[in-house]
Length: 447
Ligand code: NDP
Image (tube, rainbow, N blue to C red; front, side, top):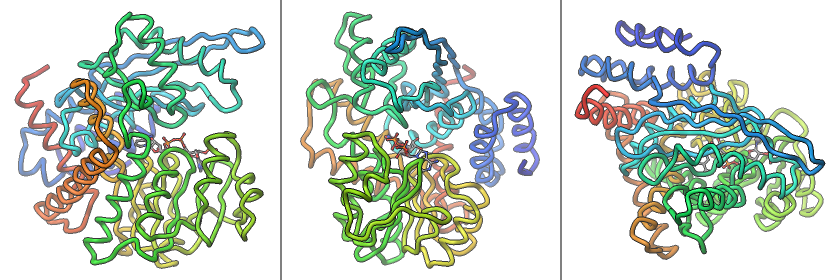
């Protein structure tokens, strides 16, 4: 457990005691608290606000019964944590993965508050999901699960209350089944209730690409701040899902080469550059393993055999898979191999010790709540289009995303400077995100 100064420690002790057995939530809170000491010193009125901010406004846990293809009844657990609505309706994805529990949903929801604040758009923070594992399930099973999940969730969400989107295990297919069931239950076509929808039924251009693209825009600005760019760089991107796929696409567009990616079964090294058509075929169409990528690609691509992806020499690293996937050993390998920038496409993928090693060695480090905010920002743009019954072009939407990420990047740097931590994106993101929410909470009174 970290040690904090005075009042912060008292708040943290309460959070720790009140939320036993939730290590991921504790980790996310600690990470924010580590940046906040100078703010609380300047503004003691924020101490009470912080205590309130760590307590979700509402936590919903529910049973999700569904029938599998053999006729057996299966039971999963559903979650929605509505963390903070000071800036706007709760906004944050749904994750379907066997590891999902209250601690994971709360860590994600807590981070989401600050991330959403950083976008500068009017959205509060929330997160949800289920311990349902879509892997190996038929399409019909996924549909029945989604329908049952929404049959409970629908009463808690709405375009002005809580607007879920996708996350791990929840892509366009799942959002479709969820939206269909919502529409059926309420008997209204309320596009703004979910984001990540298909283009023909209320979705936004660039939403599928937004988290990956946004992370690369942010990393590109980090390099730019040092007078550098992606041109000619060798890059590692972990994962091979939504975020990773579009991060790879944008890095290639910007002149970098992604020489390795991963999935939960291992990693692949492809020095000539990951072939996105083959990757999409394997992961999006076949929903298969990376070994199939190696078979289809030939051309010298190999499956990693030792250590992790992070031990492959490269100039930049974008962890885009899952939490705590880049540890101290990995960070030491990145530093040894001359990596210059790490930007988190995933949420909390870098362990606290790994972050210390990277920052200690002068590697520029972009935390997820800033670097991967492009996804939720574009979700907010989807909400805008739904509210005005409009749809924008790809280029217009991508330019909006680019501008949001640049402003966010600059806000982190300026805030870090203001608090005597030049170049420290963690301090900048945590403080800038926090202050905006804290001021709104103060204005709204004790609620
Ligand atoms: P997907 O389900 O599309 O992809 C997740 C990828 O990570 C899959 O390739 C999966 O492999 C891989 N993976 C899972 N666990 C591991 C592991 N232990 N080691 C290596 N690879 C692993 O999810 P997303 O791409 O949507 O999300 C990825 C991350 O980005 C998450 O942290 C999410 O919270 C975050 N994020 C997502 C946003 C979005 O808009 N989707 C927005 C902001 C953040 P396999 O195929 O084997 O399952």
